[in-house]
Image (cartoon, rainbow, N blue to C red):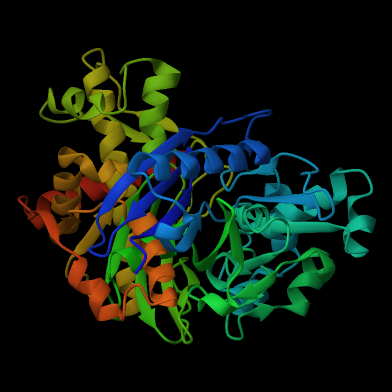
Length: 492
């Protein structure tokens, strides 16, 4: 039996590769940071070739770390930043333009135009999503309209569109496979949520030629049905594919209806398993496909656009911390924020507000305010945004939250996790392995390849590192949430 499953985790700020053993333990991790490009206000781009180069480098590094070869890899799982997309030539594999990142807001006016024409109810009904520049369809439309001859070439089938999973698999397979899995496809505004097929009405609405789209496949595949990666002179099946947040839900073993997780990454992403039929939100959340293992599972999702990115801004934009890890100590040096609220709407506000025009604000400053108060307000802003989403999720699902499983880089911040528990009034549970995005991709791949036998085997690997119990009264929480709501109203 092969020793490991290899997970490729291509995120917004970095590309990573992780080798997992049969216990779900990460035996080796390699990471390369990704350049962030901001060519105009509201624009966010990545170099697609840099994405591939950094991902390939981490694959080679992680294998070298443990002396492994392709023969030691049972399967590969791919997980990725989701709505980020690009357009490339099928024949050469050359991107036609930089990848447009999920945070990019350049198509806000186009989304508003479609909304003014009354299209949003039909979009929500078919796709489970909202008309927002966050999603891929208007990004692709922008590329087709702004890259010379792109639209006519796409209609002839010369060009390939893809989210980052498609781009990685195209390169891994030696340009043989142009595919995407159902979870990534469900984030494009182009997939029918009920049938999991490309929607002709949505293709027509966004003026997207079908010829440039990838083939939609399941999230977990048997090796004979899977794309094949060329690795060290051998072919290794890519049997697991999922967008990063769906992969994290799977990696957290949220297999039962009503279980939920929050990933504290560049953004914050709350997902709740809603079972085998879509639940359409009445409170401005999203309905999305969680995974497909031969039968589709759906989820409700709320997306917070700026979470860990606010800590990066404190480091890189203001220079008040030297490293991201320093923020907890600085924030803990004061007992509270001194009345300061930080609403980090750098790229608009996501769920449940959906205001792409909102911009960030720091409110409540006095002469006594200092960088520690600002650091604490930044952390609390992450928890406040997550609480807004979770309360809307409870109302949509009709069942109260019992606990919240957490992961992502900022979940290591104990001050933030305790504050989140205090706001929500439920336990926050952090697992031993917080690399749950990559772990979920590995589990999907390993289940497809027979490395793990069942979801029960996966669930048995999940173990608690720390449980944060609420320590504040509900009156305190309500007062804090009311104050936060007033701050949000200032930026809408």
